[in-house]
Image 1 (cartoon, rainbow, N blue to C red):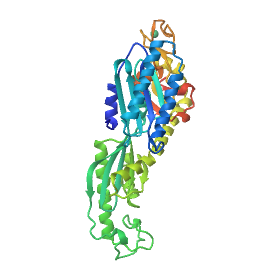
Image 2 (cartoon, rainbow, N blue to C red; image 1 turned 180 degrees about the vertical axis):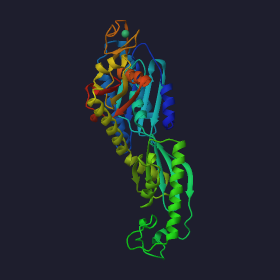
Image 3 (tube, helix red, strand yellow; image 1 turned 135 degrees about the horizontal axis):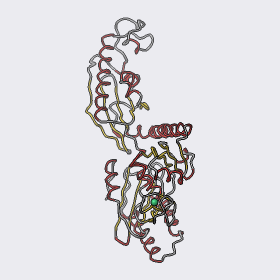
Length: 395
Ligand SMILES: [Zn+2]
């Protein structure tokens, strides 16, 4: 049985998936098997049938190639029918080459979009986009006496530090504050947290303030050592908000959401709550990337469309390549001399040397951009650019 693959493992897997041929007979299939969207087995089998139909309808003249691709589809269908166990898998990546009896399945806990391609090597762009978009989230759950910290990456939640216990022996959460002394109205830091009209034990509030200050320091130290892209805080009101205010500025600005879960909630409840706000986090990231692109446009440093991007790449001017997650893979050419990319053609548009065909010129562009700059993937419909490709250039 196949096992689920987590983040760093996917990076390793991408390395294992290199399998090249001189002819395009390696088939890659991405299948959405998310139980939330396709609850029954028949649902994802039906989706696979649609992809298989696409393969059958494809115009392929070479009879040998046709036979090889049909055999690939049979191999994929059989594995899916007979071997696949969904468990918590949400996405399935299957790669095969029947000619070499080579088959590889990678179940992942993140969503993928249905896609079927064939070429000389596996089509890994969607997987790379998923990896690039998956942010590492730090999740801190805090109440008046405890803090737990988790990391969430690629759909997996793991607890990364032990329960952090403070000391508040007199507090009974069921009955609210244990009250005795004066009303809060003096404006001091501790009393401002008490609700209106509540009498507050100042020593208790001071103890709680110390606890949250220690939590904030522990959290900052932990994130210093184990960096995350964003922070999510959770627990009963008002402790998470108080914790946020006590964080150093560099981390306060990374707080992107609050979770309404108990500190002692089971792991699966916390994971479900984080998954629920993950789309919001992705949308914010996309908006930030597009805002940088818009600013670059204003300064004349943005280009849109494959051809201008190829030209900028060959001149080493690309600082950030921005790709739509819905970008279609398309064949192209790579210059054997200067490595310039182009749409299919025999001679390089830059230096005139011979070119060699590539299965997916967008994937090649991503690899080239990664050498001198960075690559961002944004959700498809958000990127207003020809071919779903844009770039920010250095000059
Ligand atoms: Zn060239």
